[in-house]
Image 1 (cartoon, helix red, strand yellow):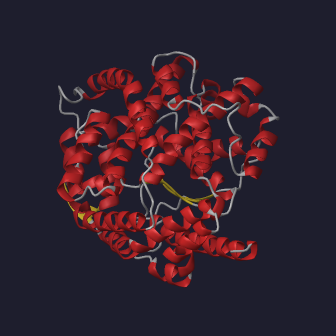
Image 2 (tube, rainbow, N blue to C red):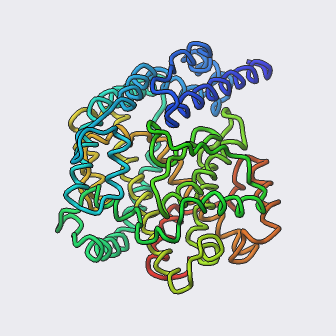
Length: 459
């Protein structure tokens, strides 16, 4: 394979990835309830074919071969993915106020103060997920078989790193969670209590700080932060709040679908989402590093843990800052721990875990990581091992980048004019600089920084 042929294949891969991002992004944004993925694969079949994988490997193009192999797995699951997307778009459940769409049930449960109603809404959402879950599981299993056919082996090193993250943050997580659950919900976490996923997410919504993190000020705060850094306008945010739009932040390439859930979580999630979209915009799909986007997301999301930024952009007073930072750090640690637990189960799916055993393993892993009861029907919604791995490694890389910027530019690095050219250099390279020396950084930097915040120590 000569350079011209290699470049042609890379262009085909980029075009296919862009078509898939467009279709999936429109679905998440509530614009297309039944996206056609098979048509995109048919139009660019060479970029997702096993023969292409073999040819690239024979030519020594291992990185490009791995990307084609990933698309080959997605192609094998395309029919099932179309089915689950259509099923979720039509999903409805009967909550305490009658029948409602899945997205409406999930949004309502997040903010419901009455526990009986909150749990009823969560049950209705779980029941509504049932038909789509079967299609999701079939998609995951088809993709796993396709990956095995092209010789893709799961990366167990990052799974072990996730286990280490859970062990290192377990005491701090359980201590702070128990205090928050008792004082705000009069509940105890597992195993002594019966804290449920719906209770945990309600706690993580941080509604007590809603007066500070107003929805109307979020675009202004982001613009005032991103403009001096030279980052404004690179990511496209669709915040139309359509009835069928998925709640929360969902990134597809450089596009973001954002349906507000309300409060501080929206600020943190959208800042991270912008970072991920910036990482995607920095390189074509055939040489894009998902961990780079996750690192930039971690960096921007970390601004929500900086008292100076909180004071300038959200009006958080000094007397409130320590509590706000601790709550946001706990929320962020929940996301890391949930990903680490889900990663291990998703990787086991690659080895043949399926059916009821999959759901049971998922519920057990999530309960161990979060100290809350979890519904097994959500297992296939949380089965993207590659995304989990990129997020965990990107978080550690982003934490190291944050520390480096603080050391070079001071604590309020985002206010320093020298930050813009430094970030521009990273985006131009489309990758983080290699670690100094010959040693690989130890994993767990992000979790350790969050634990320090929970303990009231500098991070």
